[in-house]
Length: 155
Image (cartoon, rainbow, N blue to C red; front, side):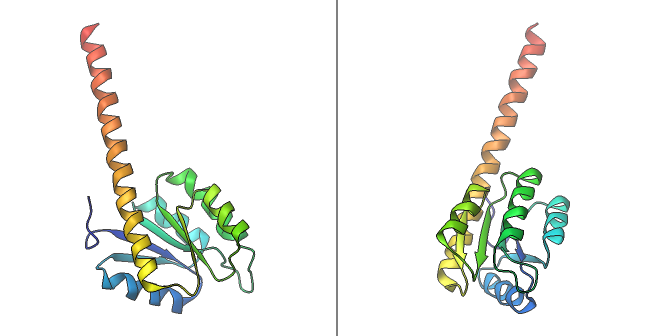
């Protein structure tokens, strides 16, 4: 399992000040971070490398508060990496938006402005959960490979 010092977190938000604040906060727990400022940049980053978690805003276009951009991004992210732990954030949250985000694959929902301790605890939990899911996936693949090898050699 990766420790915070080796875990890589992608932070996505359209506001540079928010990206920097989150980067500095996650640095206190020694996370390696990368940032993205648009849904397209998030998808590009996730296609290029594996992350231990994604912390993302739901709104990217100026004066947008519906969360639709982020919800659409969640759907597209599931097609790229269905096991990536995603924590969504918004200043314009509602119970309906949180439920829809979870339905589309988010693992947690944080309201802006965030509480630092809660955000760090949430990221830690999601990094650990993501690592456990990846371990399970690798074990399943090894088991499937052993079964297929056994079938080839026994036939």
